[in-house]
Length: 461
Image (cartoon, rainbow, N blue to C red; front, side, top):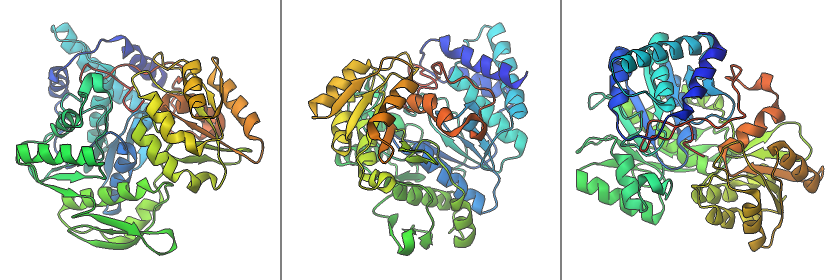
């Protein structure tokens, strides 16, 4: 299988329907010889911050000399971005080889009468195969949606071989996960067995914290909580001071913009220490952290006038965090936002969070078929007193209009959907500089995954 053929196969799977259950994934793992087993893992679930936390946790493990495989979703540059070994996307030929192995196993199951696998299941399986083939010594695995029925919930290990990070709990995907914080917390924490003491909990709002504490009490789960067992604060010269039950780290570098990234760093460091059972060494940890990059998370595009910032905030909590950190990227400027939002998101609440930080909005439509109509988004912006225009054409036209409105000394913010970022980021940065593209076509919606009614590459939004 060639790299392009692998991408065509992965993208062809978006026609599959939505189905509950992990039976397909368990059967696929068995057919592949259980590549998900045999190495310690940090499993990252939550509503926001999963990708950043996963990348930081992988760096923390790498600083201890462990060859680490990292599985991420969704992507903004290309399909290979989802499967990294040693901090780099797997090579194109290896990606094709691993997807080909999964396809062969999946087709064998189908011939034997099994249910056809979904896109997210294939990608998850390919990641595990890639980690085994590379000799990875540890894994960091980001869940797609929820937890209970997510394809990543086939991970197994002894009590000392797996740590779960719960980054946040907010109302999201309520049609699939439930419409209360309690229901969503239960879905995400279902990746843990009753009585586990291997949970790390990130920064929670009052409702999310109450829900998580109640679910932990009901199931006998104990945790390290950010703000209690794990603490973080600013240190001198822009560094971060992190304290965990295992160690104190007085001056860690953090190359990612956004105050929320301090929380992600603290939880990632604590998770790595919980997994290893000891404190991390500061010098190699610092070297590894300096190399961390997270595409599409408060990402400033180099060399553009006006300044262009990309952020994947795609729900109200994400927009709240973005609004609080935006001055780190744009200074005192109030940017013109190019926005697209998927139909299962609370667009009104998202606009309410970000509107006070904006000068104007250009409402766009990403390539995803569930993107909200630009006229609808523009109307929501006007309710907040913003100048707003709707561009119901190529996203590039919306970006061009926003740049003209901002002027050469202004700023443009692209936000609301990771699919909008996938549309626009290659043209801003240049395809040759986007690691992991493998000829991927980003002009169509990724498919459905294997989680609760089996969505697919749409986790994140």
